[in-house]
Image (cartoon, rainbow, N blue to C red; front, side):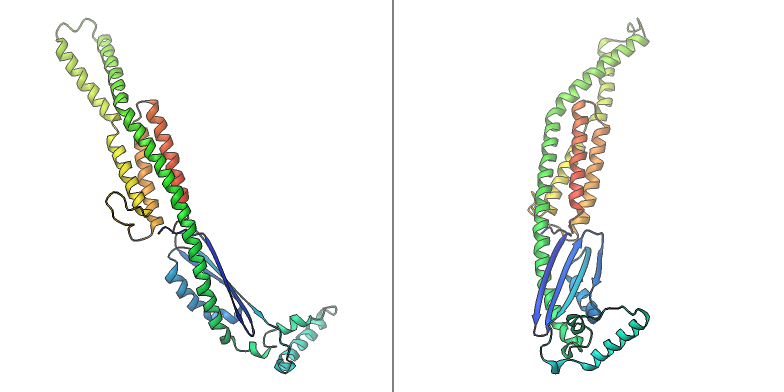
Length: 307
């Protein structure tokens, strides 16, 4: 399945002492980059969170945000008086320098580290944080799958358009080659007649025609794009296989990073389109080469977000 590197997932876990909220955001990146924005109380969980994310996400720049919202205690007996006294002493020290410093509100005091007795041990949040991570990962993966399916659909549409351009060129190619051969033959005859006026007495018409035909065939090879068209069609088959279509061979999507495979594939397709343009002997082929390069670039842009 094709997955996007752009996704979002979040989850919350409620505890008697408060609520844990964890969010996962990701954008495209060549490698897996993890960034954590978590409270100090949860820093010791970064290794466990990293292990879970590395097992689930091969590529992308992933930001992990976690927040703790402590529930205010209504039982005065569960308030840590020593922590409150520490906060008061800190306020006095600040007011000694900045006299007009406002006193903190009750909610701010209750959120002060260690004021609520249940908040003294950060380990009690661990299970909730890891559970929130698992739930957020489910939503995160669903978002990646949905966006990946959308990207695959767009890419199949572009691939279909490329196939139509190739079929159009294939149908026009015999007439293009014939017209080019005739133009080249006339040009060669005119060149020989100009260079050797009255010089055809010593060469038969059949021999002259044969030589001109050989020259025309030689130059025609320069605009024969059958190989380029065949390779582009082969690349379209491989694209379908990478996207999960299976292709004509019936084989499934290859292993490895689809995004990296697609990037290499589009480089090869663009090379064939450039060769097609360089061999252009008719305006139809020039237009086809331009259309192909535009469609391939659009495919490349979509693939930038694929895992």
